[in-house]
Length: 75
Image (cartoon, rainbow, N blue to C red; front, side, top):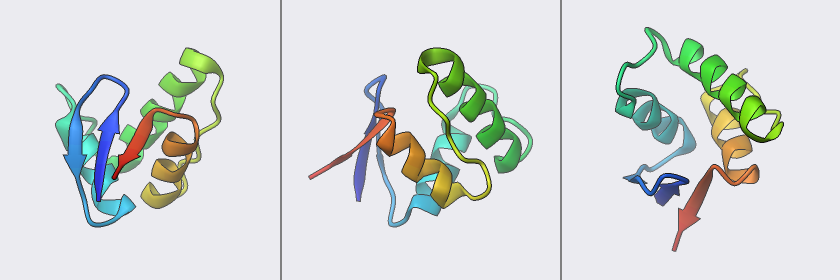
């Protein structure tokens, strides 16, 4: 599956879990754990447009990022 972020970064991942890991590792200064990255990401999304992004799992996190428009799945 191919994905594009709001800032134009394109990523390819076979699952939402792998996409979350790729997003986490692609940041300039990654948080120490994916859980911390998800919490930071959810906080930024809330500040940006009030989105509520779940953090209980990488899959749920990516589903919410897609639903909120931060990531789009490409054909």
